[in-house]
Amino acid sequence: MNYNGYCLHSGFLGREGQEKLLLRIRDLLQDAPLYTPQMPRTGKPMSVRMSNCGTLGWVSDKQGYRYQEYHPENRIPWPAIPQILLDIWAGLAGYSAPPEACLINYYDAKARLGLHVDKDEIDMKAPIVSISLGDTALFRMGGTGRRDPTRSVRIISGDVMIMAGPARRCYHGVDRIYPGTSSLLAEGGRFNLTLRRVSTP
Ligand code: MD6
Ligand code: FE
Image (cartoon, rainbow, N blue to C red; front, top):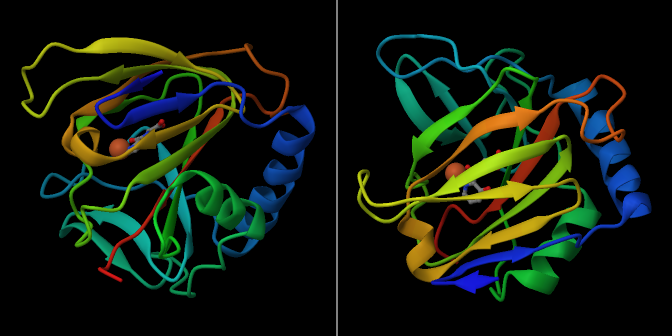
C-alpha cells in the first residue's frame, strides 16, 4: 500500500526480528522509563505512556510539546537509538541523514491516541518511520484538514509504516488496541516506535 506518501510494509519484521528489537527496547527502558505525558495547558494525563531514545526526544507537559535532550523525570540524556532501528531507517526512509529521535509509545488495552499531525520537527521534509510491536491497533489516517474523511487500517506486530511527502502533514491517530492479539509482550499491549529527523541536515 502506498498512498500519497503513506506506505505500510506489512509483516516487515518476522517474529525473530520483533523479539530482538523488543529486547533492545526493554533494555533501554531501564535507563529511560516510560512516563505518563500530560496534555499542554490542562495537564490532563495521556493514556499512552512514553519514552524516547536518540539525541532528542519528544515530550509533552503543561508547558507544551517539544523535543529535548533528556528524560523529563530523571533528567538523564536519552539512550542511543539501537542499531536495528538505524538499519530500518537506512533501508526504508530514503533520506540521507539519520534519525535524531525515536519516540516510544506504549499502549495498554485501554490506551488511545487522538487525531494529530506531527509538526514539531523543523525538518518536515524527512519521513517518519514507524514500527509496531505487540497487540494489533486500529490506526486512523485522514487528510490535511482535521475534518477530512479518514480510513482505518489494522496495524499488526512487525508492521512498518512510513509517512513521507504529503502524508507527513495528514491527521492520524490510534482508535483502539485489540487485547490478546499478539503473544509478543508478556504483559500485553503495544509498543509503537517512531523514528524522526528533527533538525535540517
Ligand atoms: C501509533 N503513530 O502508531 C502512533 N505518527 O501508535 C503515530 O502517531 C505516527 O505511526 C507519525 C508517523 C507514523 C506514525
Ligand atoms: Fe503521529
